[in-house]
Image (tube, helix red, strand yellow):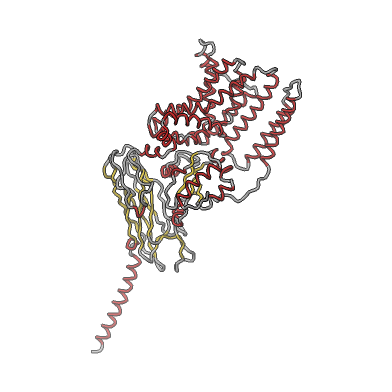
Length: 613
């Protein structure tokens, strides 16, 4: 009789142990999704065609649990990864994962990069201009693995479904989910006329709205004059002097006529840019600033320098001369027009970044007539000084015995053109090679101009000019290879969305410098502006980020260009600690140290109010 309780007790213990093991096994097999709640949200209630909005997938973790970072510490760990399915009419930008934190767990020897609490994974969505109004669904999968301090659950793949309402062109969108995206965020959908709204933030647009078209055209003319201070325009000086020195014939009326045709050639180049920008709405940052264009311009410089060394004479193409054979001065006029077209292209790499704002406005308006006149006025301002320079060059022919010493002057301009060719291709060369290339060129040029070239005059003045110029050229070469002292400068970080997320979490503003290896004005910014002591000191409160756009047409670069509305380089974007851009402070093109400090005064008070007057 006593055996029954004994067997019952054993049975109960067996059942208990089995249940315990089953519970532990079930815990190991439980999906990670049981401890992670996910939702997909938009920053706006609707998005019109042609706009870009911000979307996000939000994951909320149970207390005591974590998931691995998007880039986990160890290769075998399951990363957190959001994958989006393609949707016709929609373009998804790069997914921005939050900054991870490092935590130490009992099951790992080293601290691991993980996410805890609420995780927000953002991504921009661009709606095609021809998208049909109505409902569409953004679908994707979020993969992750949840762990606590002692164990990890089975990896999970959670399906994401996000309804998106594409609005009609006349419907306005409203910000929603402000607890995630912020109130009044600039990342909300632009209105149906998104390109125009973008242009409204453009300085050119504000100028036209405040001053009217007539005064705005006058301001654009002054802008054209100011473009003559950019480095890429310098080669136009020896080209102009060399050309009109040969073709001016010393006759004021003819030289002036040729100069006007020369100016017209420059105007045609930039007016065509304006018309094409208006018709296509596209920018020319990549076209005017990539490595092949730099090599092409350098080749033009070398070809023009050969003319200065007497290898050939600059003449219009033969078919143009044949067409102009019925006109007494047609060949000369067409030749001057052709040269104007050439120098317009030569100036493009530096002029392009400065005129991005104008291109943006013209492209947004879609008005080719307005685009033509804006760029025509700009090019007249750019070319006006060269009309005076051409008159001076033509007058050189009137000087006594000009043929004797003008040969030496042409050789000098020839070396200057080779130097400008080196200037254009310098961004494509290794940094250590450039100073020695400059030294080699100046050594050859200085020795040739001072002692080998045989042009002489009866007086001593020209003799000492030759020696002085040659010594100055040699001094430039020696200075180029002298070791430079390296002072502590700005510490730049390579762009990563996690860096910006961390800056927001720390309450710090950020500066994004969109740059490229082939961008000459970008080099000028690094050399003169970002090396200035006042700029270095003033930027310390900021997180300084370099955004490499060398591969300008790559998908990654395209995504960043859309996300930050960047048309070309250099572009500098100022972000508040909340991640919103201070649009009035945006820099496009080269900006000197003092002007850059003025932009900082616009950006920093709006962010944290730390910069003192």
